[in-house]
Amino acid sequence: MTDDEVNKHFKALKAKYQASDYQDCSPSSPLYFMLRKTDLGIKLSPFELDWLITHDLSETSKLIFLKPAEEKNLLEVPNLEQEIQKILVELSPLMSKYQVPTDYQPVLDDPYNPLCFLLLRLESEEPLTIHEIQWLEARRLVETTVIAKEMSRKLSRFLRLKAKYQASQHPDSSRSSPLFPILERLDEDRQLTDEELNWLKSQELFETLEIYHNKGAVWETEFFKLKEKYHAIKHSKNSSVVKQLYQTLQKFDAGERMEESELEILKEQKLTETFLMLREVEQTRHFAELKQSYGAADFDESAPSSNLYQVLKKIDAGELLMKSEMTFLSRRNLTDTMAFAADKYAESLNTKVTSGNQLLSPKEIEWLKQNGREELMIFAQQKQFAFLKSRYHVSDYENQSPSDPLYSILLKFFKVKRLPATEVAWLKQNPLFEPGSPLFIAHHKNEARLYELEYQKTGDKWHIVDAVSHWRSADKAIKAVNLTRNSKLKLSKMKGFKLKSILLTARGEALRDIGKLEEAETCARQAFELQPDNHLAYMLMGTISLKRKEYSDGKMWFKKAKKRGASSQQIDAEIEQVAEKADKDNILLNNGK
Image (tube, rainbow, N blue to C red; front, side):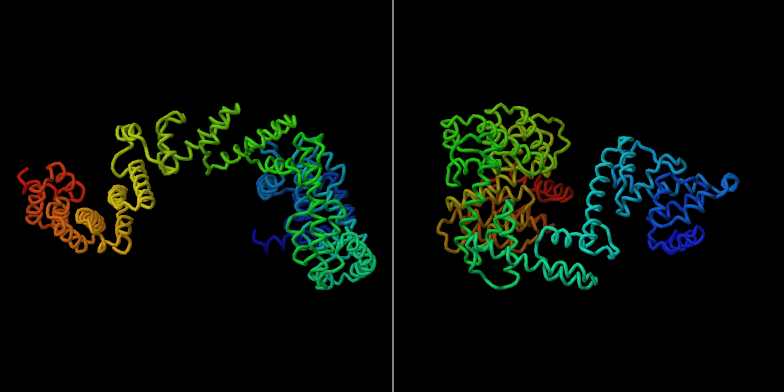
């Protein structure tokens, strides 16, 4: 049914069963549920009948309860089972929301199973009675019971606060009502903000406002005492600052934990003496809590200036202690604290691993090994291996053991470290390492980055030549082009003809890869003009001709390249790299292959 149809149906049922004065028109209202059940000839539970009475619907209750039994028995409802199932389907989201076990089957036609009714009560934010909660407990609906108790506690408190502060006439009694936090602040003798005061006015809760203003004199006296006590007499008279300061001092005086941001208010108001006093007391409290938490309660020192306070803060943050800090603890026989430090650090490493996107460093892995955390170490490595395989698109690789060579290889890719010759050889023998494959591309990206880093460290432009080659192999020719820009390399100022020629050739190859053939040709011609024996520049011209389908020119350039030292294998490899099959066969044919 549409919303309009539901509203009309509910209105008709309320009229039929003398409940028209009831204001709630929501489709999730417990009353709508009960009237639908009644109209289907289903008996109500005792909880439902009690609800009608407590909501001033005694006439409705009598009408339902005193309805002749024979009329109920003779009532014929078309498709009764389908109607019951329809209601249960409507209520299924509530089953999940209030954590009813999936194997628990709700029913409508059993007057001794009011679960659906109770879930609607919770949805309407009505506190359940003690007997209703006991019914949930008896059925071992543990999570639902916890939710019901917590909701009932908060709702009951809200109703008590409304009565206490003369706000009972306000219709909204849900926990999400803006009135609830306002009344809680009022009950805690805290000042209200201008927005909260304006909200009370807009709701015409004038009695509540009067109670609040009557408390003002008491607050002024208390505030003055707090300012004297904590040397904060000289402060800004700005209303918002006054409220913040009062709340900060009040909270501190009550022994509540202070946040650094709250103490910063004191610094902003140049209440340095107050700031230092409160910070020292707060740190002393924190130090005492940390000593209690981490096995150092018998330690004599209590001042925040103690080295132990700094050590305990590191432990609490899950940081690894330095050797000097461990020695500090050992000399003071704080062995329990040392054990807590190890457990806390291991816990932080476990959190780092289970987050799924952070890798442990070799130092962290080694710490786990040396401190008897082999199980966590293996778990961390397995998680890292799975993460790395996903990152480098080789999740289908079946071996999950961290001892597999691929784990070490992927880890080096992630940390941008060079592979030793043994791992490169292993890669080249692996079926996953084919040109264009994810592993092939990852390897060449890694090498390209490493050569770029070498260039940044040394300024040696030969590393640029190697980087360009690897970027091209990784199918990232644009990166190679950007890397060899004249503005970056300042080719015009270079003195060595050989290196300049090789760099121009490398740039030309990258330009050819992205289809900029005219620019590539310019680079090739400049390259062999600088160094006539540079066979790579002639091979570049040959592949450019091949791209242009100028096969006779290509044949000429490849012959020139061969005369200057290019091998047949080099020429074939270049043709293989840039030519389509038909073009390659044509060139090979023209070359007499």
